[in-house]
Image (cartoon, rainbow over all chains, first blue to last red; front, side):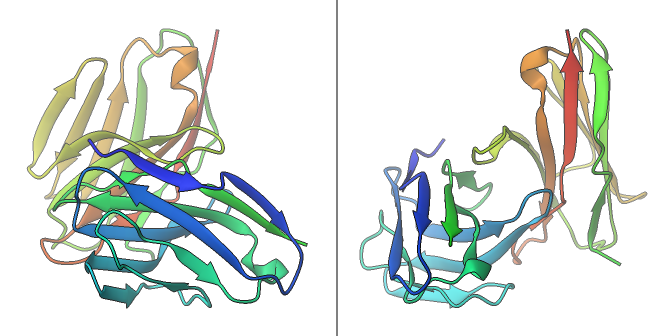
Length: 110
Length: 110
């Protein structure tokens, strides 16, 4: 089982601000993922990485970007936050199957 | 038609009841099946993972997969108030990304 950490857990920020959501895991998993989840809705994959220096966009179009410089770290950045970015962001990691999730970051953009 | 269908509920049962949660799917290539439990404002927690038809039991939880009917179930015996959460089914092919259902909200009433 993976230990996955996300910070901050909650973030309220004004429109136009740059934000970075942090995700780190301690199990050495090669695969990491970012999902977006709105209340009562499915998880939607927005970014994934199969290893260092490898990042791909997911099924849901997102204005966010990610980087994977270290195996354990997979931050997500929004250059200019907008109210439409208000959502819960979930990070996950895996070594094959299944995926293990972090606690999530609930982002509110005013 | 969505690839994975799940009744969103809410489902309300008395403590001690047997709970049945279900998902149907349309992609016959799905081979791996998972159930996650998600408490409010938390990340999904893996409950069960299986890649074959039939039953898999873990404590009070039993996962059932019927590939011929494209139907999976999660049974919870002797349900407890602490089981109150949203339950997500998830599935994938051998090479593709995980597809999540929207989740079923369960309340176990003391």
